[in-house]
Image 1: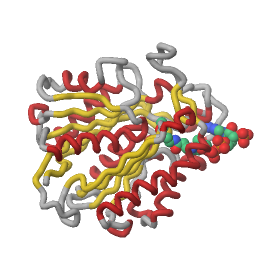
Image 2 (image 1 turned 90 degrees about the vertical axis):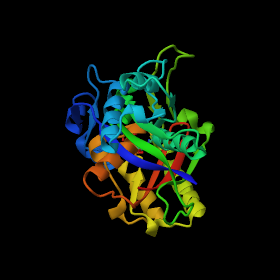
Image 3 (image 1 turned 60 degrees about the horizontal axis):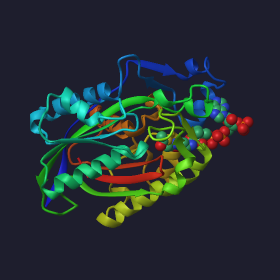
Length: 324
Ligand code: ACO
């Protein structure tokens, strides 16, 4: 059978890092409150000329370099983003053009913080079906552009960034114990929760992008259960358990949600990759940024069993289990 094997990974952050102390100049908050409630110490914020397509392109180029490939080797680009440069054309086709690629197919998908998990799952369906050979999956968001900078309950949480992986369809034995690549993925959504975490506008309503509003406690209340459910689904599909994981790379929204999920699942804290302290919640970018960090510092190695997980607006949520 064909599985989607990770050939390369890359990431990109805006130049400017903003500390909690800086935010206290804008809204009534404190470093202590933000660190205690979220674990966030700083985040990167896109400046002039830095957009989802420029950050996504930088991450894509780094991933291609890591894979030793060029855009000529790709036939699919999937970009997960909720903050496209334009309403259309898609950020994926813009990045495709910037990569000098005129063949293959490129499109965006939108699942907010679950975007990367959705994007990898979709690309994996193309690759494992045999229809496509190599996919670039990019998670990128510039949520700072749709944050209400007067709302202290949301503006302290988010950051901007991008991460990308190159996936290749490779023949494997069909044994999850030894195969490399995406071993299983589980996507969920429940639109009834939409108003709890949403933007106040859009192209078809207000004609502008709106700003983020969130019932933080409500999101928190559902997060841990939803996350642990889809990870339990991944265990049921493969026979693995938390003890088998080498790395747990969750969406980086809030350290308390990550810690509670890991504890409930019985995952050793030493296996949990945390970057929310320095990146904040970068939405679709958070998982590939965390993966790139743990791969870059030598933690994630070939053969490691890596669990990805995310939950976000929609609500959407999902898990992807990969053997690196
Ligand atoms: N600084 C200081 N005080 C603040 C701040 C702030 N930045 N923000 C809120 N407060 C105050 C509130 O006004 C409230 O004051 P009150 O008691 O006088 O009314 C108090 O702090 C407590 O507020 P809560 O909202 O109850 O705080 P909570 O402990 O729930 O933490 C938080 C808030 C961090 C937002 C938390 O609920 C959370 O992380 N929720 C989940 C968010 C999330 O994971 N989102 C993921 C998906 S994001 C996506 O998909 C785009």
